[in-house]
Structures are given as structure tokens and as C-alpha cells.
Image 1 (tube, rainbow, N blue to C red):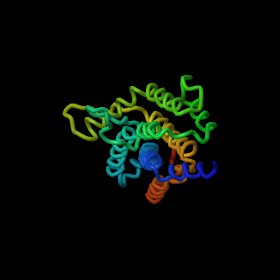
Image 2: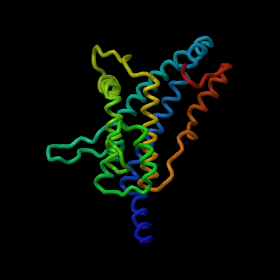
Image 3: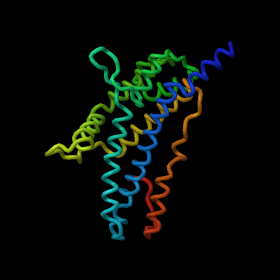
Image 4: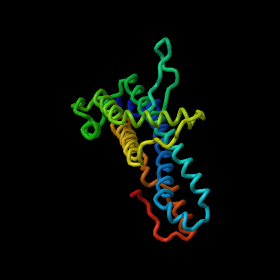
Length: 232
């Protein structure tokens, strides 16, 4: 029995689900860095302007970060689209891509307590157990909660990030707080999949915020004293 369990666990590690989940956390890592850079520039905007040096550059970088945030959030929450024959056109390293692979493989839950904690934190009560169905319903609940915000990110991506539609105003985006909430959910989803289904420890994105540290040093070198690291 133990040998069979070890075999199943070995098959999960470096399998499709594991690799999709790794792809998901790479998108989350990029989103984390973009949010950090945007936050630092915005929170210290007045001080940067007062110094004068690099004002135009930092403004340009800030705008690029918002575009990257919108693109990454769309990647993380994008569903896999099916073609005319019912088959998925392109498999994605997204939350829905991971869920679909879990459903297709009928992967067992190896840490029900971790799933239960996640479900009870984010669900509207539809998922009462610790199954894959409860996890899927929880994702749907969060998508419904942020439906308008996700649509605004998608509109920005389509009309400004991927194309340049005449007359589109790119300023109508959700708040920074919403961006952080969507990141937190994606990060916790990735973590619960790692622990409860693949039986591996998740990457620690909190200790991988090197870009924020580098930018903070640059701001220090420019002469900014009390550098703010959080939005008001």
C-alpha cells in the first residue's frame, strides 16, 4: 500500500498538474514584482518629483507596471476555451487550467485540512467538504465576487495591452487593494494545490521580492530618506 502511495506521489511531482502549478506561480511571481514596483513608485511619488531626477522615467515605469499587472491577472484567472469539438484549444497555466487537470486526472486530496481551510476562507458556503468540487466552487465564488473587476482588467488587456483601440480610456482600472486581493487568492490557491494534491512545499514569494529591494536601494541612492513601502 505504501509503495503504491509513493508511486502516485512521484507521478504527481513533475507531472502535468505540477508543471501547470509551477507555471501559475511564475505568473504570480511576476505579478508580485509588478505590484511592488508600482506601489513603491506611487507611495513615494511626491518625494521622487521633489528630487526631480528620474521623474519621467519613474512615471513611465509606473505605467508599464500597471499594464503588466492587468496582463498577469488576466493570465492567472483565464479559463481554458473549448473549440467546436469540445476540446480545449490551448492549455493554460492558470487557476482554471490547474483545476481542469486535477479533474481530468481524478487526483486524490492528500491534505483535506488544507483544502478545508481554503474553502471556508473564500467560499460562500457552497463547498462544505474538502473535495475537488468544493475547491472548484470556491474559485467560482471568488470569480463571481470580483466579476466586474476582472472584466475591467480584461477590457484593459484587450483594448490597450494587446491592441491600441482608438478612444479607449485606460484609467478605469480597479484599485490597488483589489489587485492585492486577487494576488493573495491566486497565491493561496497555488499553495493549497502544492500541499494538498502534489505534496510539495510551495515557493515562498514573500522571500522572493528582490525587485522591491533593488528599487528601494535605487530610491535611497537618489536621496530619498523615509521610503514608504505601502500605499495609504
